[in-house]
Length: 108
Image 1 (cartoon, helix red, strand yellow):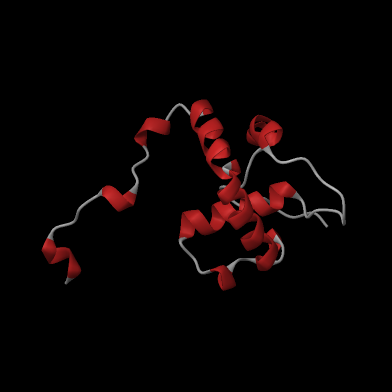
Image 2 (tube, rainbow, N blue to C red):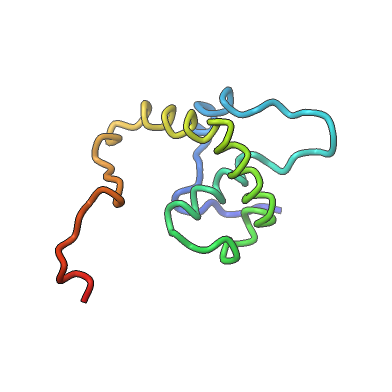
């Protein structure tokens, strides 16, 4: 199945940067493609969509959710974001919306 990449999906170059940071595959059943799951995590982070709205091209939402929780607890996602930020020339331009204060009138 050939799936068209979404606008912000990981490129081959980005995947090559973070591949060494991903946990090794352990015993048990074959793990869902890391790239697909990461793209799903990035999609949800970027859009703020609820987990139930995750498009099917990213795999089962429970898989994406479980990987997000496990990798978040282990620090894997932090390592990935730091590695990608080091490679991005515009990394200093991004602003965390949680620290931006709005005027009272914004609330309506």
